[in-house]
Image 1 (tube, rainbow, N blue to C red):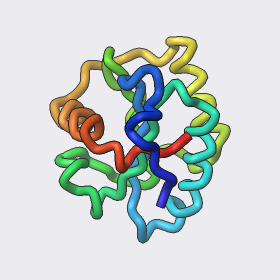
Image 2 (tube, one colour):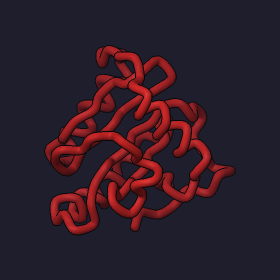
Image 3 (spheres, helix red, strand yellow):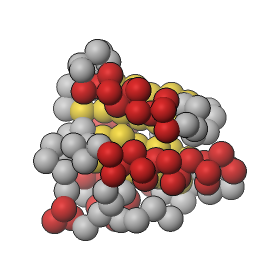
Image 4 (cartoon, rainbow, N blue to C red):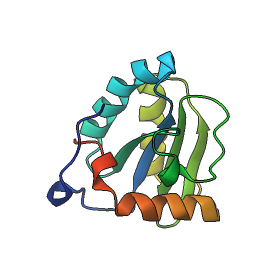
Length: 130
């Protein structure tokens, strides 16, 4: 279980999200969890969340996850990345650097993504503590 961020220590921009969608039974996900938490510490400008698609199915809603780990990177302008990611710190770091340089184009949020982001804003218990 990731360390949780208390609501009063939220990052400056609550609309920059990095969300990992995993399953507890997945060995890759369990191994990736500490890497993901390290990236959260390195990128305090983003709000990170770790969601088990089965245990937090009510938050995940109808988002389709085909393989693990799947990462969603989104902000107020739209979805910057959504898909499976090799579970390495360098891969996620490159993606986040691209987001900071604004080289990841935003696509409009799907209704399922909007629903997830709205639910996460109201559920700080799933935010990863930086």
